[in-house]
Image 1 (tube, rainbow, N blue to C red):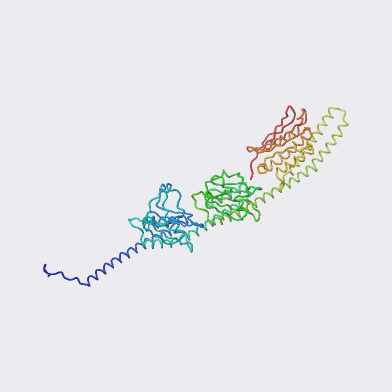
Image 2 (tube, rainbow, N blue to C red):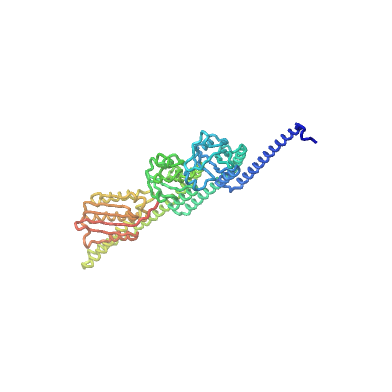
Length: 571
């Protein structure tokens, strides 16, 4: 045994080597345990991502949540890169709703985030503010120091980037964290690709279903107005838009005939010039035109020029073969991601089917209208060849009897009967004229009324002054046109036969859903005792359509005929 005074023994060199070996082994064991724990976290993270609901939105949210938990970060986000650069979508976790409201708009891909877009490689920073590309944070943005960004690749394309900030524990992200997140990003790329394929399959199925429904509505003969409403409703839903607008070409302008969604009431019935509009650009180009942000445009994007609540939009032409019908315009609100190439292609395919449906519906309506006019022709011929000729012969026979009747009372009665027959013939001729007045492909109502005014000059001795509202051509249905033309013809004829007027005027307008016709002259007015069977006929036409007629004779001469009926707008 060594005594207290003896010198200390020398440490055996072999023991020192053993201590070092044991220390190194312990360190490597800890590293292996750390790698094992990291691998378990990575495997668990990948399993969590793979078990997410197979829609792209749910997959992106799960990736962000799993990445944050795997490296114990406070905030995490995934920025989806837009086709035009920048970020078109930003999925984030760690921010409460109050913070988001205070910050305002989400990141758009500037500063460090923009650097990762242009240089897609892993980036680890101890402090974000120390990097030259840092541009600072908006007001009310939470403080952030440590940062880790890793690109996510889908196939050969960089789909987006994972952003992680503020690693808990008081130290920054490690090299192991970079490896773990990079491996997670590789697995996430595969899951995202599968989710995109799944979403694309569902999207195509929904678009095809919408096309089938549209075709069914057209074949069922539901009518143009209903078909147009279905088109706007379905494309808005399928495109994930806030508003959709269908505008039809109407001469040199485009008329909004259907709208669905946000501010739909502000668009319906809107008319805008075709020349110079974005709709005309899409029609001339024969393809859809997209805008990432309407509010940033230097020119008005018709038909959305009157509403400033939209961000991205697309204008899709409606063409059946070489025949342009109009456009479909779809818009999203400012906070929503912009339309991408898939949206444009799907909308173009749907618009092509919608245009064919509208063209087919128009052809069916023309066939039905042609059948109606064919039947009117037959009725008109029968009335002229059978009824009018027979009435005319009867009137001649009665007129010849009058000369041989010695009783003045009987002669007057017979003469009145002849007058009634003459009035009936006039009414029948007016009816026949009305039957032929509006044919498929015929001129507009205004041009037909102008022609009636010109023809009336042969009876009047002058051309009456005609003032006709442009809305008449689009808002007066066929069932009213027949009576309207007959009333104008009869009214002008009466002035020429009885008024001895030097001037006459016709005014026709639509106000508050009512068609109002006014025919005035400066003649002698309606004499007392004059037969008014023609006027009774005009009143009957008005009352049959739910309207009224009034005739006013001024004391100083002249007559005013007021004829009005309610109308319902048809598109």
